[in-house]
Length: 228
Image (tube, rainbow, N blue to C red; front, side, top):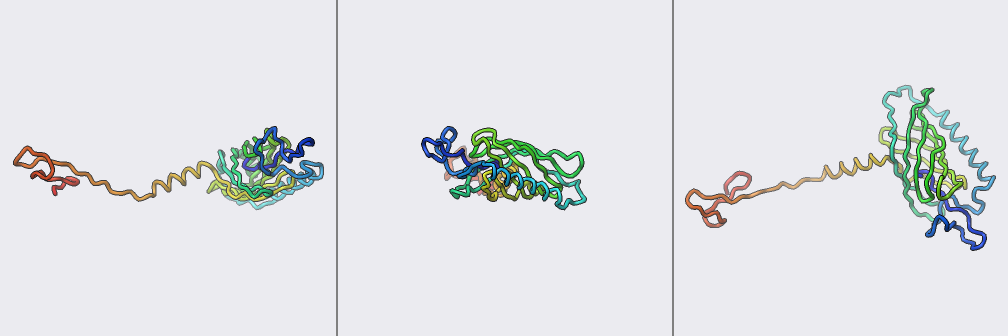
């Protein structure tokens, strides 16, 4: 998803190819790939990172005033860098914020898609101050890939700044992460602010002395209602 940017499965034993061509015929290095991809040690380290992110969000400061806090539930688009190839990839993530019954913030759910396949947000939480974490699991493509995202939402600008960590222990920052609706509004605003050129119209009218309406034969021309 916007978060899940993992690598393809490990190389086949027969061909020695580091990519699983059943899913990716034109494969590139992606986040799930490592020499010991998804091994037990990596998963244990990843689980500890998830627990740490949960504690950090739980212990973060929460403003007293919660009335103006309106997170945007909808489509977000992201850009991330493959740490092995250095290439930029786009991803999309549909995030839903559900008010927490204990009034501590918002539960995060949703689904997304990126170069590694489709993902589902398994769990996540955002405090009223925007501090957040969530974890995604691939449900197609690079099956077995999990990605932890953590950082801060700006609920007023509908943006997110943070990092991702795959259970292969590859990690990196999000280069951009914002609501698709906000991007469309900004594009429309730019177009509406472009200077508009005045339109001048002219019509040929009859003079008072003949029926000749051809310009240049005693027929005055009016511009914006004024004879010239």
